[in-house]
Image 1 (cartoon, rainbow, N blue to C red):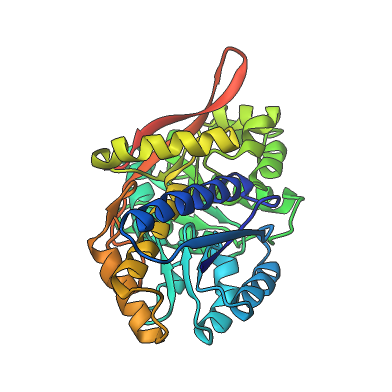
Image 2: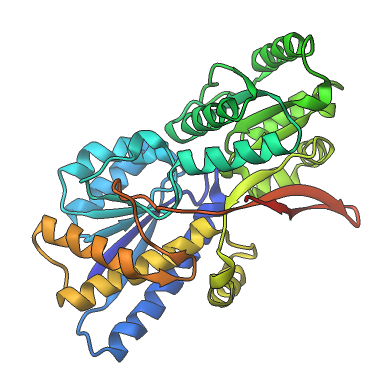
Length: 372
């Protein structure tokens, strides 16, 4: 048996992705084992899933346990903060790790055993900045949770927006455990007042890179009429958030501010392949999976291809990494080609934009656009 561990946030922040990821790894292992059986390959995958709660120290503990118990591959963790915490021990282990959701540019490092089956923040930041600018926004206040992934998105989005000809005012990232956002909102209001001296309110936007704590932030911002009448944008960490969707005040705020956020998307050429798997994941979780979760299915199949061509798991670390790079470069799955760049990150990506809109008295996530 070839062991694969999934390290996902099942009960903490961004649990919507964690739960979809759990279903994806389970379904992927079943299908990959059928593939290996048909190919008469005498190896099978076995998966175990563990709850990180999106906590970096918990992720470190779980990864250490996996490495010490003979696990060959780890899928996850889903956040850059967790991945950054794991990296030092990952570099010293023989475990190959594939994250489905980490985007921080600071982790785009070639030659290590960390791979990311989603594009790094430089790709997402450029896409969302372009879309924000094209919507008529010319001045952007950027806000972020103080972790590697979200501050990376704040920086990359701000840089791309500036390069497009826009004006950026960045707030200091707020603490991971922060629940009272009064001082942050006051800072946003101060920056907004300054920008209004040059720009109309329709030309000013607010970009927020966050996880589910956006619910508290939106609820507190809802008391300010001015903040309810400005266009807000988000990072990938809130797309399809159940916590945001089910909070009536925060959901109404997102709707009134025309809030939308990017989801790593599926190429049109792969939609026929992804739809059946997405339906199976939804049957397990009750929610539509995004491309982050679906990328896990492709990661499992790249692992299966490594096992097939290598006739097992290469014991030599360099040989294992070379085999994985080779298979990823030529594989095309339910999320499209899995070609990686020199840092081991997905080389390309397109994005769907999702917002919360009310229908028949109920708020739901709807796709409101696509990146170019």
